[in-house]
Image 1 (cartoon, helix red, strand yellow):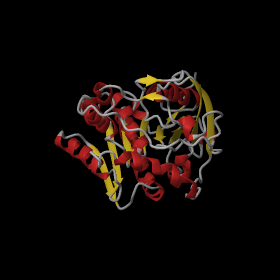
Image 2: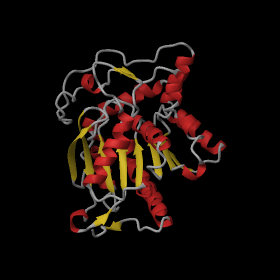
Image 3: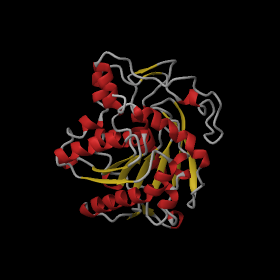
Image 4: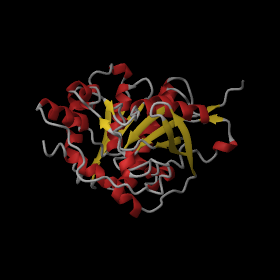
Length: 324
């Protein structure tokens, strides 16, 4: 059990390592603010557009990249995601989802609306498709993330296979809900972060009343019952999606990462059930240098999967804008 719960400590390290990373951001990144009904407040996301976006009328596929625990919407740009996409005809969207774990919380307190799954699949995707020239259907949409975001990428993709043809997880906390369910079965409370959360705003985030770790940690209970955990557990979800609806799954993890064992356990489940996937394992820990190195490979795989699906659907990897 202790090994399964190491994800919490490992995920928290993400926010600590980002300030020391090089600003690997050679592509233009825009910050967008919009109103979300799901969480009842204004939210932000970063977006990187193809270099020729303004000179064409083309519609492009979209990759959603999810950040880790204690991190924010600026993380993937700092890790070099826009630079990795510079040779691809691809829109890259990097949203802010706080310390929410990308699920709809079972209970919210202090008047909060913590519908973070709905925030992604309804509000964010809807806003991106309405604002940019995207290929707004399953064949042109992928999702991926690191650590907490890797868990989120799998859960959102498996719960909504109609939205994504490719789902991914890098150093993912894939056993988060599984471990929580095991604790509840044993009659134990779910673990909470020890110590006081920082009330110091992070100027990089720039969301009033929503920029400190205390403000960015939802109030309430993410899971109340074992069934709540099961409903957001990739180990259970992946075997329930019909094979003809199942998105392609991409996974990677470093050999020195504390989460590698849970990733290997998920990989074993995929192999036992003959579920297609792409898996990469190489040297590295739960740290910025590993993600900076691996994002290009992950992005290339997911872009190729979208191209394959678009071709199968009789559509090009990018589409000219239809005249009204």
